[in-house]
Image: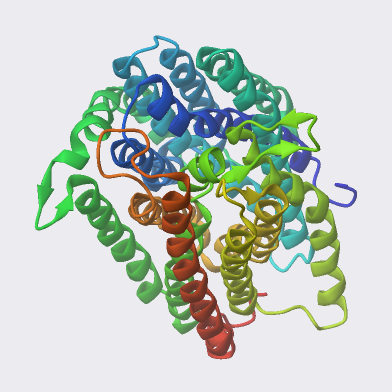
Length: 488
């Protein structure tokens, strides 16, 4: 699979696979843990889930910046992985306090790990290397093998035998990922080292200590942030806006300090970041409202042999990524060889259209639901299939795109900015998910039929809106591609 690619790709593939096993194992259990073990209502649980996932993807802004300027990408990945494992083990305390403390540590660790391991992938390839997109697609398969293992094993074990088993296994998986990275780091060919040895010597330990001291701040933000409101928005919203202004200022400054080509590329990157928010805000219902939807309004009986746990329904997406990822990887290379490879904005637009089509399928599924208001499992699977093909048009291409469009001296910062768009997605995703759930403290306030109508009503609107946005981006693809000045 990695024939012809740099040897370091296999190391990064393995490390990222186990990091995603850790994250998706924890994420797959989180909404169920909040509603079933800690007995929170939907609205409160989704708010906490949304705050956590938004901060997970906002943290790479700082993790990427500190890797660019102080640590280098290799040290950042190792430190981040260790802190993520620590977070999983803290959750084993079994109370809200230990959950929020562990979530805070996971946020810090992910901030250092996620953006920087993706940056190293890009560093392994020379400018203009046609294997780069293929390499990122292979790397993306590693992400989804980890996610698949998390959803077919880690999350169901936690749901069936006790949540502490799931969180503990996720932590062990993260430690294994760190071990793979450390053992194979010599294959990275020197990519990812600190840019300034003197700066590293002076600031390495303060960076580590300062990062750990930020855990109590994140604890307070997850626990109380959604209760602190100003002008109708909670504290997290203003923190994300502040980070956005910081990131946009740095990106635009870098763009306008360079030539017209660099400026145009930065502008395109920021535009596609906006469309990325749209895609993932709808896609990321998987871990929150779609998991609750599967728990309450999907017939999960498989041939009268097996009752699939609600958390396990998230396995469709990583399974389809694994089945189709290599096909897409080869497809992009072959289309490029014959001059038929769609440009990056076109791929984004087509991906968003497929996402919307997936949600529209649920309208068909609702029409097939019987008196028990249960949608057939295969309809949910088909929805995830369209979501997955849409993801393959957008997400691995987006990772590769950042390493191409960003100025070389700030690739980590640009990757952090890319993940900030995911943070906004998670914030918006939580707001959308709240529309499907109860407002009270009871776990379920609606009858199955009422719940189904509420779910598919929201999903149908999401489907039509995202299809329209995807069509708009397809129409804009030619001028945006021209502004990329040859980046493919």
